[in-house]
Image (cartoon, rainbow, N blue to C red; front, side, top):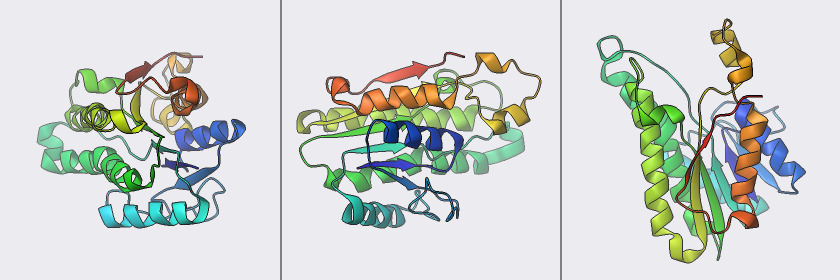
Length: 218
């Protein structure tokens, strides 16, 4: 069983579909109250709440276990200068991008038996923050450091931890926000999903602690 957080979003639903094509049993978890979404098995879950996250993952394993993989897609994007957003935007980006992944990883660890896979979603923007991008870039940099550190902690127990680093993903929301952009340079969700599927596979058993840019267009 593979848990996908943020399963109702454009990337989450693409990942769930690609993994299902590869024969995986996917359990979707999302904060949104998307009870009618077939990709979401556990809705209304605040993954930044450590106890709520633990209960959801425990319930997923009890219903569909054993657990093999976790893909941490839950997150979001916002931008504001320090003068405009103050500390609030930094707290928000930390909570939805880094803390969700942190809590999900922590809740999953007791359920891995002998081997497992964790894939986090970082961001190419974490390498250098532009104006008004500090909070987002910092939160995604935290995801990278979590990935590297946890990979070392789990290196000898058969659990790999990696992250993919997309830039702009070609989603309906991004097209609406940037209608004048060249969409052909953006990365389709399915392309990112295929890289994630590889990192979850046996073929990637020797890959851990990697931060993999996935930035190609169509």
